[in-house]
Length: 134
Image (tube, rainbow, N blue to C red; front, side, top):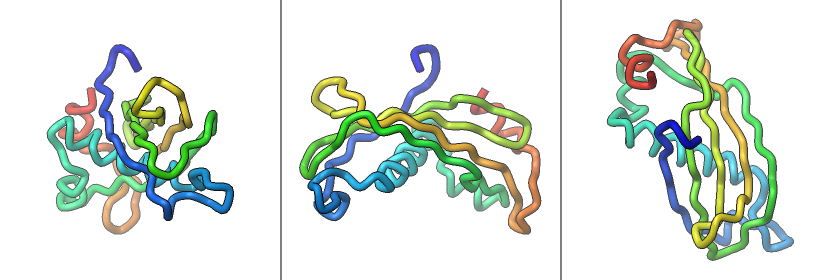
């Protein structure tokens, strides 16, 4: 994470994101990963919507999350997002969710994205996407 572009997205935990125990429900971390992913692309000067408009889609093909410490209603959390790997037809983004105040790690994870066209056929990453991620 140190030698590459890392995007940071800060969010406040909403009541609807917590479970009966008062902690953030595990699936919401994947939603936060998505928020971080959008900001990561925007920080690099390319909105994901631009790639969709040009006919390239990057659906999640795999996701992984490891939970380290719980987050609670009202807390500010920061999602750190970076490019883990780039292959000819796939990218992997890494995530680390921390408390905004301090550096407590709440969760870590990654998502793999396969490049497809509008018909669902696997395609090589377009050269423009591949080069700006290089």
